[in-house]
Each structure stands twice: as structure tokens, then as C-alpha cells.
Length: 189
Image (cartoon, rainbow, N blue to C red):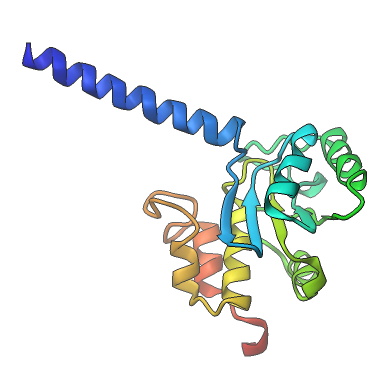
């Protein structure tokens, strides 16, 4: 009898965890607050849902990191029609700026320059940074934001990108993890 209770509790836990992951990915689009009232990150939000997130968080700018340069082995099915649909939905909001800054998994100098141009302008805040899944590029750029604008150390920003950090794409020895560990702030180069 005791074993049946343990199995039932275990299965209930697994069902709850799976339900949360499904909700986070497909209803909440992995939306996360980086800094309340300033910066948020997510996966791609369905165009018909963008207005809801914009209104709820008073978002003034959206940085979309998807684009043709991002086809890679991590399965980012960047579709031009999806990017265009998002851009069109944002344009109808009139009060929101849309910036498409296609980025590889590890940012290059050009994409970081474009990103910082947006982030350096206080009129663009609050900002939503997103990629396709919301767990790679959006997190890298969120970490860059924390390093550049909130004085996080590289390690603090890296550790804040993923939980658990161990075995994630931000772990020691991974391209994104090493990029964040070795990143130099713009005024320290």
C-alpha cells in the first residue's frame, strides 16, 4: 500500500511538472522578468498575443533576435513569414518599436552593436528581448544587459541565465557559457 502511495505522488509530481513546462512554453511563451519595469525576455509570442504582453508590462520596444543567420543545429526554425507576422502585429500597436536583430547563438560584434544601440536609448524602455525558444539567445542578451547596465559580474549574469546552470548551454565549457565568462564590458575594453 505504501509503495502505491509513493508511486502515485511521484506520478502526480511528474504530471504537475510537465503541465508547468507546457504552460510556460505554450501559454506564457517562457516570458520572464529580467528587471521589473525595464527588461523582459521570452520566446516568440504568437502575433495575436503580443498586445496582451505589451499592455500588461507597458513594453515600448521589442527586440526580435530571429532571422536567417540563425539556422543552426539547435533547431531554431526561423521562418520569415513568422517574423513578418510579428513585425506587422507590432506595427499595428503604434506605440511599440520593433527591432529585428538576427543573432547567432553566440553574439558577434555587429549584433551586439545593434543591440546596445537600442538599449542605450532610455526612450525604448521597457524592452522585451526574444528569440525563438526564449532559452538561448534571449538569455545571452539578457545577461549582456545585466553586465552592461546593472553592473552584474560576468559570473553573476551567467549564473542568472539558466537554472540549473550545470549541464545547461551556459555551463562551463559551452560556447555561450564561455562567451559570458570572457565578455568584456564596453567601457573596459
